[in-house]
Length: 229
Image 1 (tube, rainbow, N blue to C red):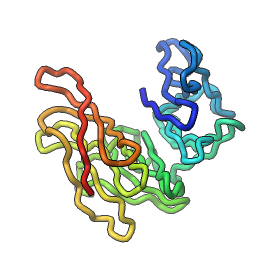
Image 2: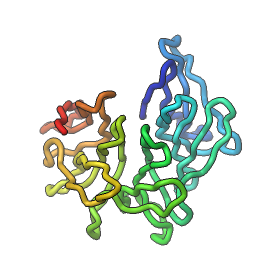
Image 3: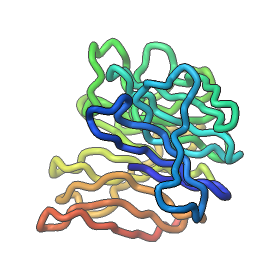
Image 4: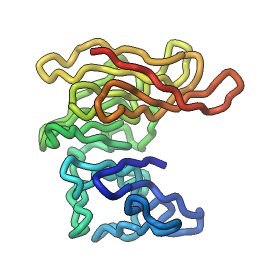
């Protein structure tokens, strides 16, 4: 489940029983709303689609959503009032969980791969950054076999956090500066590479990072780190 908040609404992935159609749905909940008052966001033309991982655009009226239907994931830009959408993923690519740059919303990033791979497998993803309708470029490690997943922009658009493999073969959080004039800024590991970690998020002012990481007993714990840049 993923949650984000604009001025008075929270959006999240609602996971319904396996027998439900669809299984994953985008939900909206008014801030401080009553229990069980979240409503499904039914996107026109995608009523039965598997939609997940919503994140707000800066205007608070638009969401970036992943359509996982038929294991052929694409990103949708969805207006929460009109319920109309636009597919953003570049033709010939699949894109898992995405993030939008809140300073320049023409810039999105996602865990993606070419459709030429034959079948979507998140373990083959790299972090792809896409500017408008231009061809995406790889923002994570370019090395063959290296993966990148679950990206997230800092609110000022200057940093990104994402998941990749540690030297110990566990998913670990990494951060990297977003400098479009220099795509090869250092990729910096966060946390302990011996224990699996995922889904990093920045504080609103960008000074802190939180993520989920296993401890030495295999339990999931929330970790907090301070960023100095």
